[in-house]
Length: 395
Ligand SMILES: *Cc1c(COP(=O)(O)O)cnc(C)c1O
Image (tube, rainbow, N blue to C red; front, side, top):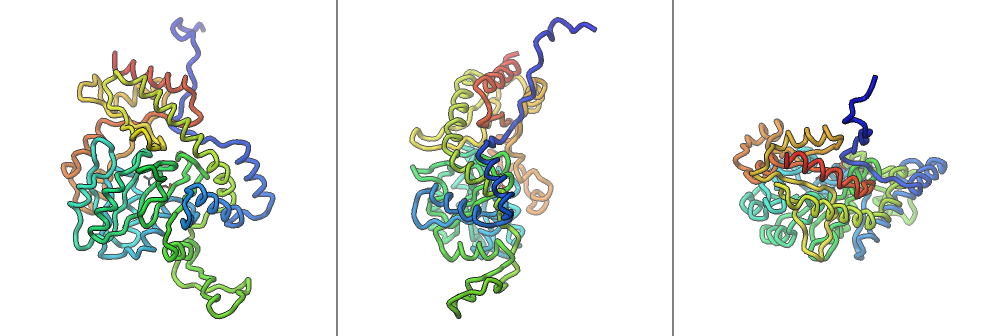
């Protein structure tokens, strides 16, 4: 058989949408953990928590390692006393984990629309959704660009509401020159899921300045076990003694995962720099196409560049679905962040939601796609994606 002339060049390998970057140091640390015999929560998890608090760089912040950001968000709302009858306001333009944790506690979710410029929760929409039942605001730093936290925190102060930041995309991200995790919200939660800016496979971190919230999250992270209770009565806790003070959860991080995290954390800044370089190259290569490019933060702010989200303009020659098909045909993986919560059967039915209530999220969803952006990509990979977009959009 002879190959047709036009296929003389070998097909490029598939470019996945996301890939973690795990180096020799992570691998050696995991092997060391396995050989140590301490495979569940132990000294490396403790060290990871200390390193994380040090990374944030402000005194008085406690970091609590958990086995996912979902777990951390659940613990955060539980520690704040959210329960049946309460409402928590969050964005419809997020992953379901942000909102499902509110339902775990029997409280209700008030989904609100986004600012079409940033795709972040719209502070005016938050204010309009507040009722006497509202207890907390749960902003998400979409794609790794900070929410206008000055506005969110001002609303919270005015109405006596708690604030928990979903910072699953936001390591490292700054707002007004301060790292997310050091702002004035009650609790901030990071994710180390496989495709996030640093990864432990599965994992997360809740951070807070409030010692009482930290103590509650630590107790509830592991079965409601409290060893401090004994301290009040005796100088020394026998190693075998503990008390159960609540029906807690099983949300602790393993030392195997923390072993990865110790080294991933040290690479968080170089990883961000690489992502920012690749994002800037995309910006330059795509500027003349019928696309709305991702919003850029002010020059002195850090964007984590977890995601590179494009939107088709009205004069684009093809729609979003066809564009994603064209990219797949060119061997390029892509994704959509997100199918808004108001379109999912559970959330739609639970709260009787209509797309017309969320016009900015709905419109963004219909025209958006996320293209690959991760540290293992080369500039040639970015050029390849940009060329495929150009072929599809300038036929
Ligand atoms: C990934 C993600 C989560 C959940 O993180 P896990 O660590 O997988 O539980 C929550 N919120 C947002 C916005 C996310 O992207």
